[in-house]
Image 1: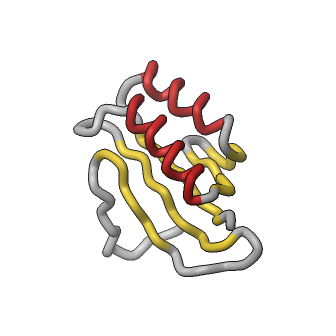
Image 2 (image 1 turned 120 degrees about the horizontal axis):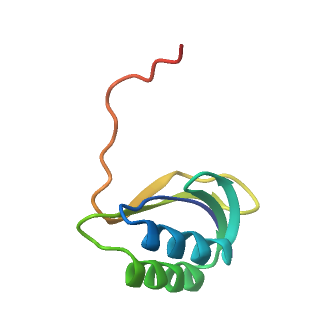
Length: 96
């Protein structure tokens, strides 16, 4: 069963940034600068994480995998971080 993931990244080096972009372009749809949507099986997710882990620097870069649930429906949102840890933003978002 495939699940939908938002994959977002913050890469500190231009060369690694291009490598991450090219890698993700082979797995999903480019939604926004540094954001892709990917439909992945559990095996796909392991493979993609391994490919990205080989590119990024764990202490400088971050890739977030946001699980949107089964591709056919909606599920609970789960956020995992590869590299720097994910920090929940507790302050409210102000749109002007």
